[in-house]
Each structure stands twice: as structure tokens, then as C-alpha cells.
Image (cartoon, rainbow, N blue to C red; front, side, top):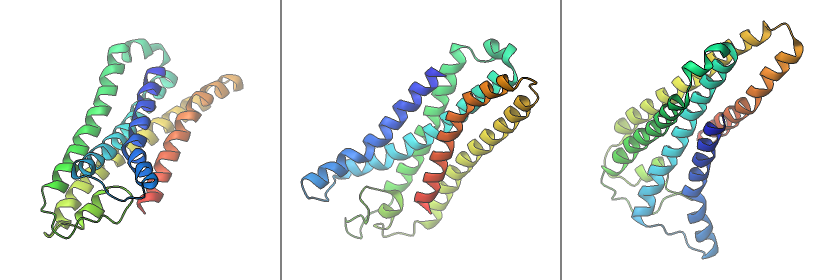
Length: 202
């Protein structure tokens, strides 16, 4: 679990570092400028870290599922090599999703000025600067992202349904409490990420 928490902390640090330093610099120097390369990097790294974080939370849900529902098989199913592979898959999923968004966004010609109506470079605001019909292209990319995120969400929900069923069958109340206490921090992070992300995009 600590290996996954380290990866989660690095992803959170990366996510914050994508937007906050530029925003703080703009506030301190009373400017709203960002370079083209800076805008491209924000559009790449923000979806990269967010997607990788959500995929890592899915991997952590699987880790909790195996630890609680199949404790005798934990060592064989999830060794140190499996941890590294699952974390690498989460990082790679974020990379591929971000690459898809960035390539799609900057393959369009930007000709309607250079002012983004946002405090950081965000894909919808950047696409408004395009002089071509971008909606259909972006809809497909958004659908791919939504399928990935929705698939992760469904996997997390199914994992926790199985976990709760297994925990409620434990006869000892103290053992139930111990099992639930290992899941609550993860559930809290999933809820916070999902609710704030949904609220921000709505």
C-alpha cells in the first residue's frame, strides 16, 4: 500500500505543479501571459496526472480487494513485480490519454486570437481559438477519456461491493472494523477526486 501511496503523492504533486506555479507567477507579476510551449505542457501534463491518478486509485481498489477477499493468495497475486507493473500501467494510461488530447488539440490551426478565457490553458478554451470545426474530433477524444474513467469507476465500485460483502460475513466485529478502516482512506480519496472533478467540469 505504501508503494501505491508514494505513486499517488507523486501524481498529486505533479498535478499541482502543472498549474499553480504559472498561476502564482502571473499573480505576482500582474500578467496573464503564457508561452505556447507552456500552454502545450499544461494541456499535456494536467490530463496526464489526473488520468494516471484515477487509474492508480483503481489499482489500489484491486489491492484492497485481494487483501480482504483473498488474503491467503495475496502474496502470489500481488508481489513486488505485480505492484510495479500495475503502477506502470496507471502511468502509461495517463500518458496515452494526455498524448491523445494534446495531439488532437494542437493539430488544429489556432487563428482566433491568443487570449484563453481561463487562468490556465484548458482544452475547451484552447479549442475555441481554432478556426476549424473541432467539435466532432474533440467529442471522440472526450468519449475515449470518459470510457476510461467510467471503466475505472465501475471497477472501483464492483471491487468495493465485493469487499463489503466479504467484510460483512466476518463474525468478529473488531475484525470488521479493522477491514473497513483499511478501506476508508482510499474511499475518501476516490470520493473527493470524483466529486470535485465532476463539480469542476459541470
